[in-house]
Length: 342
Image (cartoon, rainbow, N blue to C red; front, top):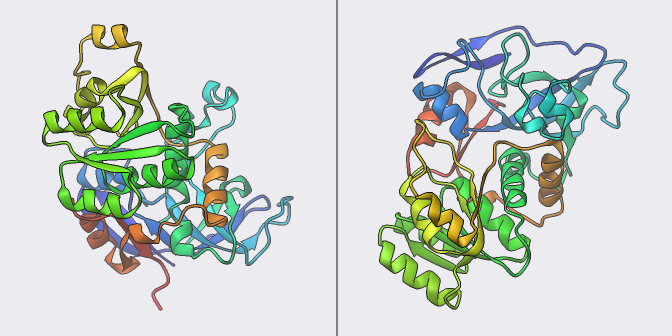
């Protein structure tokens, strides 16, 4: 089989290796599609390091083609699945207290880490979520990023009828938008790119705001919310100025979630009195739990959320390096790598 191997920053090689065989408690998956996430982009650029060489990829869908003799679950050969490819040791403090998304051992060498830019891979049964045969496998590959957005809006405790500002109109911002609308909230989207704002509007944003003009941003929020400000905000852009402007347009008691990650570690851009006097609540979210993943798959399976309009391009595995480079381009949404070369 073939797999894309990141051997060092900005160098991906397509290598051939033996197709793996599942043990008695494992599943063999023929990978169909894998999205190129910002994690893969940072690994490729060198801004994030796990170890080298590594097979990247964790936003994946595929088909079960073999299973071990002692797989005592509902999984059957031929099932279409979405894959949750974050390792969970089930023993550390975080795993045993409901925070498996923060498993202390999820990226440790010596286990299967990422790995979906490959024609086949082995997974544990609990990592394979069966999807409807009516859900295209390319859309099923969005289960993982959508699950991260589920966790994000749960951290914000978003309720139906509330106003949520989504700062950033990239792929993750637009997934937040789709989810917020499905939850019955009014969703406002801010960005500095007019084309991305047009995309957000076409996807149902109740208002779009150009973040380049802070005064206009504040005025629009004030008019839209009757002067009270937005109830909550998800920061999906790494532009640090967005945190400051978001704090300033929050309603009293508003909630802010830092969803994005940063290449460096910028300081919080506001004074503490800004949080104290308005009783703002500040949180962050990282990844997703198994429950978040289940919710995401249910939303896609039932057609409550559709993601076909977020696919910018589908690239063959042999061109994996071009796929990652294209995903970094600011005008791209999700680039998918297709494993089947036929």
